[in-house]
Image (cartoon, rainbow, N blue to C red; front, side, top):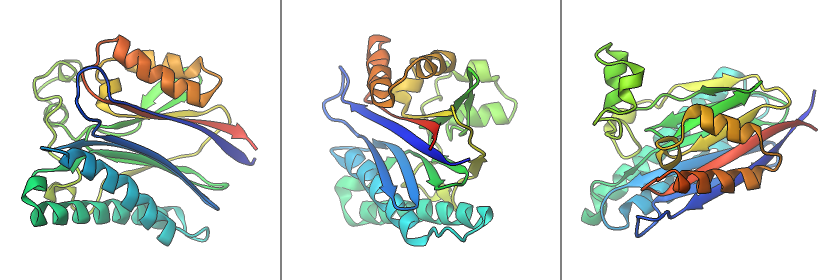
Length: 251
């Protein structure tokens, strides 16, 4: 079966921040569609710069190196290397300019080759969810200290949601911990699947089930993305709010 994607995107300053450090983009190349969300951090305008570099470098590298004849494992390798390349360039900028010394950014992305699977990867705590058959599943893993405590069986997943370290990241673009790049998930897509990529300005205030139900109930993906942004603000988000929504349809 041939598929097509309907995509919406939204990035809001919010009610409490002076500048928007989030960046979102959708790149539709001839044989490749990339959606990407990044949440920058750092002093001055450094967070904005880091997130913009991430959404610029990663699609550039993917377009350069992903070919239709590559197998699944090879594509996963290209995605990891693209993320590592972005990390290296962001770290280099931080070393050259003292105002950017501590800058960094999260990143979460989907990569779809025409006629193939959906690839998902993330660094930091921006997330990707799959909504299928009215069920919502988080595909990415947060690289926060709270999640590390969950994986060490020190606290429960429920406790992590309220833990004081839930927003403290140990891995993000701009850090040496990125190493050889993150795990890449592969999803065999079906018509009706919906994906949500978002920053913690949304996932930190609206429950997974709440987001999943909202996405499932919307017909238009652009209206869906904008509605989710407003839902986060109405729910008391004190951060920038950004998301990308993706619907898989029969071509």
